Amino acid sequence: MSSDGGIALTRKNVFAQSWPIMLANAAAPIVGLVDTFVIGRYSSTTALAGIGLGAVIYGIAYWGFGFLRMSTAGLAAQSDGAQDEGGVQAHLVRAVPLGLTIGLLIFLAQLPLLAGAFQIFTGTAEVESSAAIYIGARLWGLPATLASIALMGWFVGISRSGLALKMQIVLNAVNILLSPLFVIHFGWGLWGVGIASAIAEWCGLAAGLWLAHTAIKARGGFKSEALSKKALLNPDALKKLGITNSNIFIRTMCLTIGFSFFGNAAAAQGVIFLAGYHILMQFITMVALVLDAFAHTAEAVTGAAYGAKNRKRFDKAVRLTTEFSVYFAFLIAATIYFGGPHFIALLTKDPAVIESALRYLPYCALAPIAGFAAWQLDGIFIGTTNTVQMRNAAIAAVAIYIAAHYILTPRLGKDGIWIAFLMYYIARAVTLAFYVPNIRKHMDLSDGH
Image (cartoon, rainbow, N blue to C red):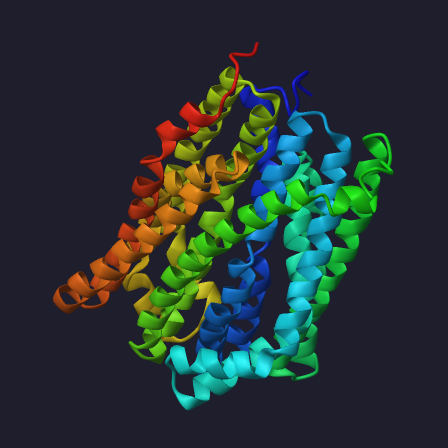
């Protein structure tokens, strides 16, 4: 550990912090990947398209409340950098119950919410029916999912990324066991893969809470002041949490609108294109979460530098994490381009879906190159909790994306859908980069050693 909070900043330590996050993040979409594999191999194309549409709608809840992870990571990292152990623990105690509560409220309101969602997202009656079955089953695990998101943010913020990985290993092990059992053996179809995922989410949360308990004991034990009513209801802390969460929520909803717009555009092209799109989105989701490992590390190390008021450490943290992000962006792009055909054939046996996915695979392979800067800048802004700028940049980027879609698609057809989506990544990076000089200007950090 550095004397001024956070890990010691070397390439070795940055990678040691990043690779468990990389695996934990990559493990997160394996739930959807397993669902896709089981249904793609043992059910119909309509059911596969239903999971595609269902994943888009379910993702609104999953990604829309991603502020639970982001704010917890940034605030916990800053408290860690300031060596405020009571503050570190208080952020955890506030965040996990908040995730459980939000998930429960969405579960209770699922009928009107789903009805509204199907008014927005297009699909055939059969596809919508399949999507509703899948979403309805997965929502049983949403409270655990949102609480786990907050818990993973806390692990990242205190530079204990290995614990986040262990939590994801438990979750995916349970899902990999239950999903084929429920579908192949019991014949429960879409509901079976959905409920298997829900059970796995609760198992992952239970494992995560136990790991958090062990981490707190290793850091010196529970601080009574962190669990006191005065600390948990501190007006300044709650105000900061509220502002941070609201800005990140707006930012995340803008991203959700962007990705949902892309999914809706795919759904409007028919079942074959939608099914192929869903397979390619498995790759893009994996790409985002792998490259996000370095962004998450940036959250922890830039947040710790911010809390310690150390400008030199901040600059070094940005440089080291960005170097790794660039290297891995090109490595993953090559892996998708050359290895993608094999994975596509593994995920579906429908020749038409395979042909559609292969046709647009090159665009998918460009996603990490177009997007690494956006993910990396996200990490820096989250770590320093410069959330107003994140919010403004997200609003501008989604407006640019939608405009590009309507300009390009009439001229280029389905290629235009993908090109506009890649431009969305670039717009996210450019709009965030506009605010970068202001971070250092307003950080009020001393040139620490």
